[in-house]
Length: 88
Image 1 (cartoon, one colour):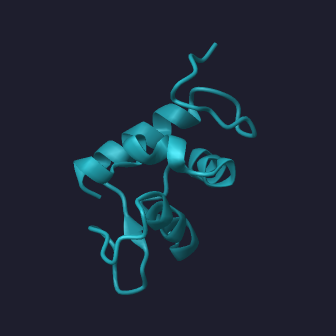
Image 2: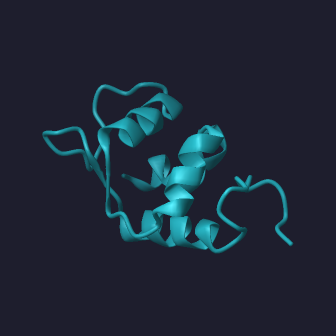
């Protein structure tokens, strides 16, 4: 993903189930089609998405992986976290 379409910038547009999946799987370097579809929808359904392969799976950048890891460590899994709220 490019910086303008990073997971961090899209986080608040992702549904809680997708946020939870990402937080529960912070080591996934390639996202499955179902998660890629949600990200595509959050972006406004672009025809192409940088980093997708022929199976429409999305490879994450090191920056996306770092962000997801930080979100996974910010609160217990099962409690979606909004970037707009401070964490305890």
